Image 1: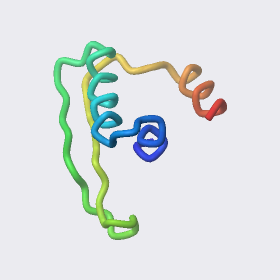
Image 2: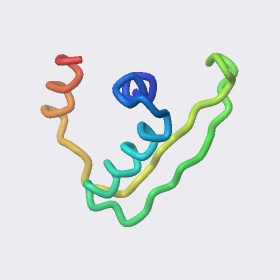
Image 3: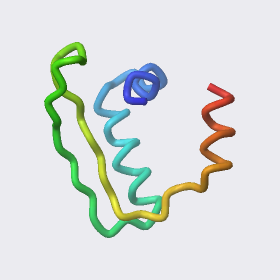
Length: 68
C-alpha cells in the first residue's frame, strides 16, 4: 500500500502523512507507528500503522482493491 500511495505522492513523506490523516478521518484516538523485522522483505522490515479508528467496511475495501 505504501508503494502505491507513494507513486501518487511526489514526496514519500506526503504518503506517510496521508496514512496518518486516514487515521484522523476514521476518528482514531490512538495511533501507533512502529517497524517490524521481516527478513523475507527487501530491506528487512516494514512500517506498521495501527489505530483505533472506525475503519471501512469490507464491501468498500473490496471495491477499492478491485479498482486499483
